[in-house]
Image (cartoon, rainbow over all chains, first blue to last red; front, top):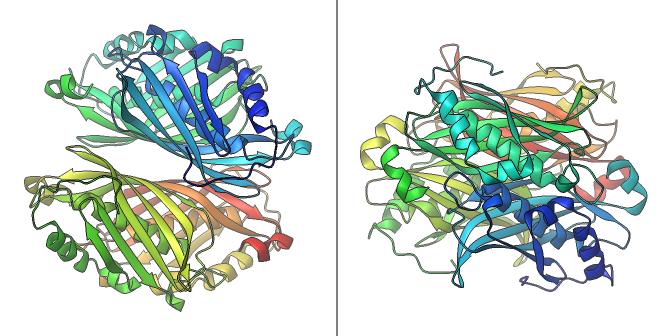
Length: 154
Length: 154
Length: 154
Length: 154
């Protein structure tokens, strides 16, 4: 959960977030699910399967990156005005441990919400038998696209 | 192709790279293929499919991140000693354009090869009708794991 | 202060940190001082002066970057073995607000301490009349150099 | 020099760049000078002095970061419309070698110039006896502030 409360500008932020997430073919292909949504906070999870592995049979870093990016990005999206969209400008990810577990959990939070740019972060944990180990941490920049600019930039 | 020639320490670097890549379940699941390998250089490509999309039907940023990380990481791997492995310590990715194309191409290169750490980069292009547009650029740190440390850290 | 307690491997970590810091000509030139040291945690501060400004008269981003890098780097150094040194492998900094204040404060913490690599973070605050505003946040990778490798890499 | 030619939107981009640079107290305090300016390209240099050192007597990483950030940022500024300003949203820096030399040289280039965001890069070299060694490389995001928004965000 986020450190401090954010006031969402879109009263339907949860439905908007679930709707956008549901249209991402990659999230479905990887088996990623939304675990929790709050203003400025999104938690994603993905159960282990062979299709998500690197060469040693653990979760692939590409999966960690993808869910960290989306957890943080959708955390920003919960604070965006109705009708707007968000895009990832950039992010940086540190891998801190192998992705060795039954599932991955990514918690995305908003660090600072500006009008145009939102700075976010995410931590990714590998969970085995209920114990979570930090395996990646992300620092990200999100850009808000007002409704009339979505066609151009989307 | 890289700016300057690197001398690989593993004469079988190409076979070792293809072998490691083939054991990554995620790369197969996403449909990623090796397009080219040279010392300090790896090019990957992935054809478009619905399973790889974000909410507007373009390639998902998670796919850009995954192939950029692997193109750059395997570029480092081509320079690693026989029997060693490499892990991504961290990377930073800037998204510069939507992933709108028939396929994505990621070119990974080595910027500086140290004994323990290798600094790499990758550019990702979205290709439509033979025209390539830069859609992401990555700066990455790779750590070389000598053969006797692989069990511990892999 | 850090979220969780770290056990320093060097009982004289505080003296070693102050000694290394005192030998950095740049920190003296910028007027940076150590405000606090604990295992896995270092706080630095620098009072405002004209020599530290950007074009609008606020603290320059270069000062934010320099003190964030050192606060996080010395946070890692507090956990390094006696006689070893640390170097910044890389860091990423997000600027979240102008550096408008009487002084800057940077708090560096350790996120994960490995044997060779330490992942750290730092937040930089601009303070005016006792009120602190987050103006930059950093995610960093530090490498520990054992005593016998310092000459080669330092 | 940049890979490809950029068309500056401000015919007086060079004077505007020199004027903004001259108002940065920190650049003067560190002894940084402009070595070259072209559309989408800025080269900075700083001669060695004791005030710029880390604990082993080499150039401090904080100097590398400061001049890399400014070389890349002013490279973006050369392409900004007349009367606008630019701010660093974020950057990531990899240190690739000690800053051991008579001077540091930073070359900043534009990778992609958008309307609101400009992605840039910079390489920093330590020069001794005319030989330059890459000691840091940067990937950066710059935001363009139109003239009417400068007061609010500067």
